Length: 506
Ligand code: HEM
Image (cartoon, rainbow, N blue to C red; front, top):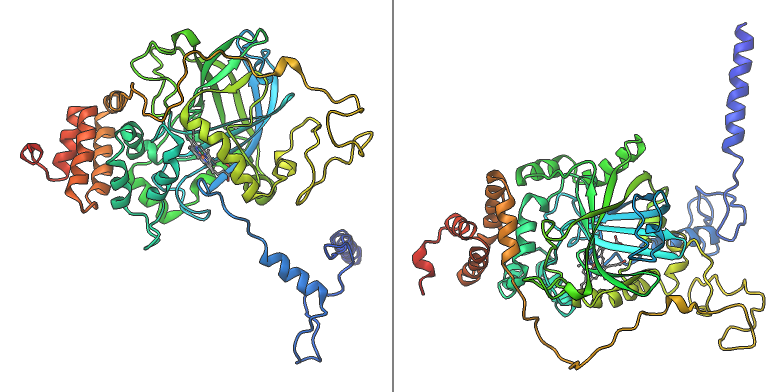
């Protein structure tokens, strides 16, 4: 009996051993490797030989493991899942995912912090990125949004300066409130988003506990060529949960990668995170009828004035298998649009339409759309060719004809998806600020919507950073902005920073 058991154990060890050794290690060229543990040397104690090709290849691959991290939003976590439409929006848009109730579309998502590098803590006070890629029947469609419904600035020309001010100093390599508020004291338009940032919404408890927003309006186009302005909102079915500054500090001491871990764990344990997708719509003839400019990214579209209509639900049900290939290499862009969606005139969005594709050509290479995670489900048919890592243009029936027009038939444009024409009358090309700035109204509304405790946390978080600012005039200007948003807000902040009314008299 004992002998039989020993034979069985030996047999299973042999079987395990067999399955483990069934894969032969190879070089990148597919050649079997003789020894992956010992370099080729001149005798047992001699120097290493340059002719050890496997060693050289292994070191060279390691030396090139890193690619440039994203210039912003470098730290992030990704997942995959599905969007299921709960409404038929075909009367407003041709966009494939929103055509019929029950229609499902595969999606990829990446959540992120903004300012700091790839290995930075997820406890940082920061907006959070909320980028969704729909792999639709008509190509890839990205909604590259944030957790806040507004942004700090309204014109792309200010973005690089804003990011410089937020990022660590070029001298000390440390983020510095002096630099941040030096910049923002010149930008009253940031009052609303700064208020969101310094509230506990600036430190979400985890990625699945935050809402998302497209921030910008887009244009939906139906099959008659009619246009409606839309804004998207993702509402977390897990509920919104934030950390107070003290909780964030404790979390940072315990595990500052908590957001990545908690998202992964939720999906691994089949506790699949879900968000409902809502749209708000404005008819083009009504776009000028508000006390703010709806295509100004510093503004939210108030839910009590513009109804939010639920159009579907997103479920995240798969974790990435390889972080580099599926998350670091994923490329989202506000310009990844499909028939039925066009960019609005929003000045911030217009700059983004250029910036993402441009940075991705730099970060991932000119053929970044050929990386597996970025590939559309459809066959790509055009004559863009070659450059690094190109793997296309070899599948045409007549690959010799890589130009158009030509005698080759079978590749055609689709008239229906041509840009919807707009007539512009009496237009002057200009460089000017919008007139309807309304920089403080929504900041005040948001402040008053907070509970007393949340207001106290906001004041304490803001005062904490503003107290580090050496220039009293910068501090006073910032207080003035918050005062204009809400008298109590400004007064509480002034008090927390040790100012009296007298200080603001002259
Ligand atoms: C003119 C303004 C802006 C510019 C020039 C800009 C530029 C960039 C750039 C260059 C990246 C890196 C992309 C990559 O390497 O793949 C990025 C990432 C990102 N941006 Fe912006 N951005 C702007 C405003 C915004 C706004 C308003 C939002 C939110 C509505 C936003 C959300 C994001 C998100 C979510 C990511 C990360 C995407 C990912 O997970 O890969 N950005 N941005």
